[in-house]
Image (cartoon, rainbow, N blue to C red; front, side, top):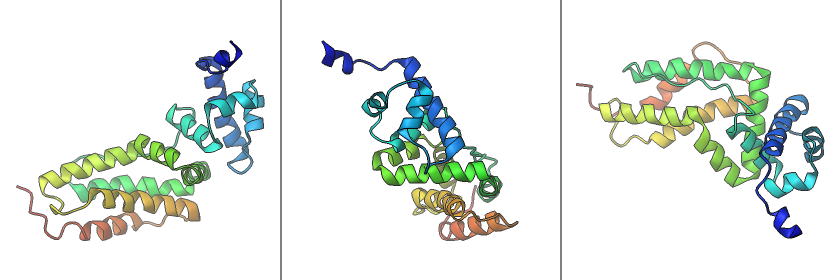
Length: 198
């Protein structure tokens, strides 16, 4: 009977408390000082409860993000019919996030979580609205002929999202014109054989 209880479905109240405590501890202490002990104490549960439901600190952070307890500001690309303009208008505020200490700190924590656990990294990638919307916007552009038939949407997404991640890791400040220059560099490799829009 005891073993059956240990395997029972987790308490929703405890789950929410743990995710909220994770977000609060992360904001207060940062990734390096985040501990399961501290989270358990704040949530009013035992460490074994957390380890039974989440295999690692990174998995816990990923769930906190996916469940909305953590939020990463992320502008989304629009669709005005002009791919370059849409990408520049999206990338500029995205790159400017590197000037916000809270946003860059959270980005670094998520990169660390993804690096620690491949499954967590995959879940975070799938859950990222910016990545998903960007890929959809590029797919539409490709169908319209704004990108070459051979253009790789995955590589374009990796290049643009990767630029933000690398700048966040380096704590680089944004300089005017960087977004446009990056978009032009990426698109120049993918538009060579694109047909003109009808």
